[in-house]
Image (cartoon, rainbow, N blue to C red; front, side, top):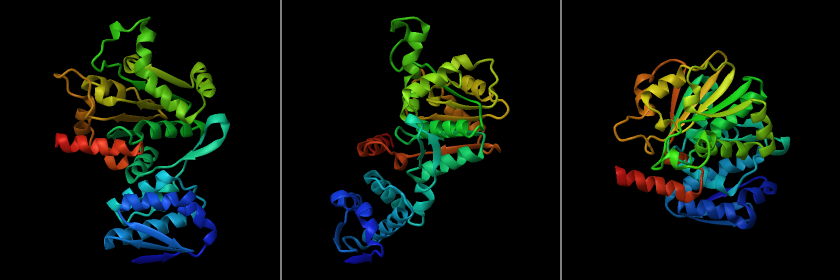
Length: 317
């Protein structure tokens, strides 16, 4: 049995969670048994996992003392991070904050939930062009959107431009009802959804009407120069090599670009190679450009999403 005693009993309700749900989550994630007696936590199970579970609890305790509002999902994220690298300091990840004015105009922040997400945020801070490549649920678009909105509020850019290729995923644009805009809108809807997750619908509409935020298909980028803008190219695995080159050469002065995509979910015709695959070979090592590769370990959606991605990776491997 391994034991850990906490000095400040006042923070334990937050650390342990309502009805001990945080300890239960850690117990399930680590595969150990956790019990408490007063301010002492006792862990039984595999020695390595038990010691690591206590290490996670100690670091989560430090986070709560520092004022971090611990959520049940954070327990699993913390266990995954420490399992991958016991030397990682959780404070350096969870206390990194991207400040935005969210719904209702209230100032709030978004924090990374994995080592990969922390690297991704830091890469956007350091570089003018960042590629984020990884599976669904790793926060590629969401974090890029948060960084774009933060840059806008901090007056680092004057506008946000969001774009993605309108590629049919087994369907045909021509079969959809309405005019060209009606046909294109379904392909841009995920970008609107990401915006509405961060800022209110009314505020989003106001910024769209004023041109502060622009959402458009990738084809509409041709011939433009984007100055003082934070530009996000989403679903970049569906670009051709020519489209990727076209997009990257739109970047003007005072601008940043984040390109996101999942190379395992390409909807291009079989004879076309993804521009996101090719660009990694062409621009690898170019100063001012960074590539961030996220994995199933960085998934922050429903716990089953990580399991699904891992299962598919094993099947395809």
